Amino acid sequence: MAINLDERYPGRANGKTLGYPQGSFKNRTSPTSKDGTYLEQDWANDQLAFFQSLIKDAKMTANGVVDTVVASQYFDALMVAIANRFARIDSPGLTGTPTAPTPGTGDNSKKLATTEFVSRILGSYPMMVSIVAVPTANMGPIMIAEAGEMWLWSSSAYYTGYRSPLCGRPLIGHTPAPLINEIDATGGLLSKAAYPALWGYAREAGLVVTQATWAANVGAYYFVDVNSTQFRVPDLRDMHMRFTGTNADGGARTLGTKQMDAGQRLQGVLGAPQEIGINGVFAALPGTATPFAASGTAAQAFSQVQMDTARTARVSSETRGINVAFHPRIHI
Image (cartoon, rainbow, N blue to C red; front, side, top):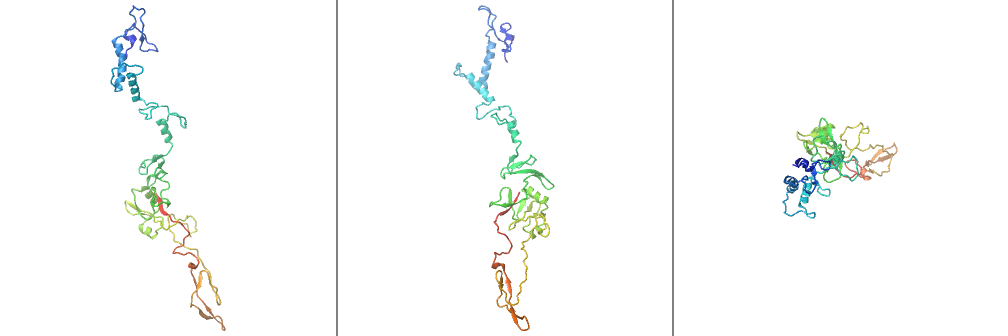
């Protein structure tokens, strides 16, 4: 409670004013008059209760020493009570729940950044999450911390959820082991539950074939529906990519199909009436001269000629260009 002096002591206290809305003390009109405000018990206790409340709120015990300006336990209790409710401006911990006006968007001053201001700023940027804690609901574009890339919400007949726009893309593996957003493209089996986005991509792109078709076309960009829990990925080892879309291959090829190696056709005619000069990729086979009659009066001989490009060029069991080796990978 708090006493209203003018109501508690009618005529012996000044009335309410803007400066003293509960009334104020009144001096007596003369040394012998009794019309001034009395210092009575209830009023004194009313004031004392305030100070003792501070001691109680601060969980302090009165030390029995008279307060002075230099050492005031009541003042110390007041500071504790304030600190328990409000953060000190110079407090590193900023305990309590201080508030401040929210700066406007784009404010670059020294004003306090409230949680409202921070939320507004962060709300304009994609949320960053771990790849093992991807949201199951659409939260807008998100950043995958470990991969350093953005994933988008995707919805199709085969997959609904977050995945990279690059999901399913063949990659050049430049590390000994796959990165966190890669898998080896070596024909292995993957869990449909662990890689639902990649399995969804394979079906969306029409790249799922039977195991027999996959085995007959090792190197093609084909997937296999192995069983209810697993799928097989392509085996891209020893392959290189060729961009399709024209008739350079005798007809535009479909996505993911395999094509065997081939060399440009070489053809020509070799002939001579008698002897022939042989070099380069050609060689005369020894002991193969065959006499024949070039005319009724002259006999001539013809030697067999062998062609082998190994005499002048690097050869192998396949046609290939100069290259550098990387690991075949697929973006999940």
